[in-house]
Amino acid sequence: MVKTSGKAPPRGDGKPSPNGDDYPICLLAQGFAYSVARRWFIAFIHEGTPLAARRSAPLSAHGLLPEGEGQIVTLPEPLPLDGGTALPGVTVAYDTYGTLNADKSNAVLVCHALTADQFAARRHPVTDKPGWWEAIIGPGKPIDTDRFFVLCPNVLGGCMGSTGPASINPKTDEPYGLSFPVITIGDMVRSQAALLDLLGIEDLVAVVGGSMGGMQVLQWAADYPKRVRAAAVIAAAAQHTPQNIAFHEVGRQAVMADPDWAGGDYYREGLSPKKGLAVARMTAHVTYLSEAALEQKFGRNLQDRQAPAFGFDADFQVESYLRHQGKSFVDRFDANAYLYITRAMDYFDVAAGGDLATRFDGTQTKFLVTSFTSDWLYPTSESRRIVRALHGARAAVSFVEVESDKGHDAFLLHEPHFHDILRGFLDTAGREAGL
Image 1 (spheres, rainbow, N blue to C red):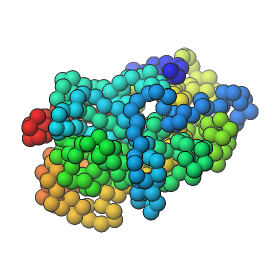
Image 2 (spheres, rainbow, N blue to C red):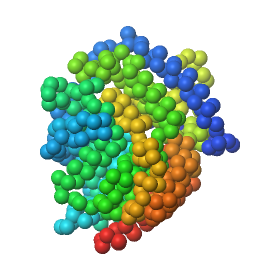
Image 3 (cartoon, rainbow, N blue to C red):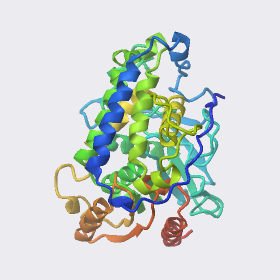
Image 4 (tube, rainbow, N blue to C red):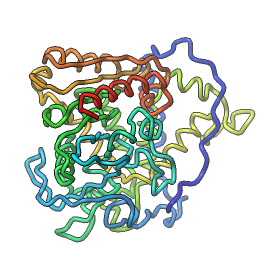
């Protein structure tokens, strides 16, 4: 196993900001632009970094997934894509928890977010860290594996076993790189439906996901309404806003500005644009937090020093934290996969430019839509838009706004009220499915 090195930096003891979550987004973005621009410049400076340190680990036959890890299937037919082409030999990697019952009627599909993967509730084979939703999935937990068979696939375009830009192109026997077709959230869901077909699972008790996972949930409910009894849409939106697209573009440009990106063909040289990808991760990670969370964790506390160093090392704890997030991310994620998945999110519009209510007209799926008060990436207003459309479609929908100061990442963290809400929703779905 390859383990990431280093420990997370200490947290600060700051008090909540009196401004709370009303901190103007425009001011955050202005400060953000300066910070990212400086780091872009640093990303170009490779003279002090030995070549060996810039090289990536060799790819396996399935991207960054170590050989022999996880469950993988190959789809028997080319996968039709929204871009108008079809992708042959698609692999879908997935992980499962619990036991599928005899009539295959107890399945719950969990859809992961941008920087996650299929290892939702077990230790990660690359980082050796706990699963990203171990608080939610397991015996007696909100997604109860004593009752449900839980399946979590790595998305199409990912790098943990599902076909993506780091996968081998069967036509060339080399990694796809930028020859991989641009994909959509709809393509991801189409590959997941094909996986379920291979496993003989016709219907789902529920589809559950947060952030990009919530987008997949909406796509599932829109494209396969007869297969989805219940849908839990968490901290998500029906389409990406210009602000969302803007932040993603900053991250993509950071990756592509790194000389080791090599026009997307870095696999051939065994390199990896680690600095650019780290900056992209740092940029995105700020959007997952809230002003109150940053104040509580770090305030203006200095990192391992009593006074400013008057240089450009990480003087502040928050700087050290973001650098740690960036460095630890590059060992488990492919830079090109980051480009493709963020682009898929930007293209996402479940209404396809039409009326959102019409998209769900007549659906029998029951919905839970959840937002968090301090989430400014996918704010409550976006969830309310989904709820209004579902009401317009005469769908059964429950909406909860959870009070939290943890920002967008609240759905991944310890939020007992949210856990109770999800547990109750899935318990009802399970009983209605006869489980």
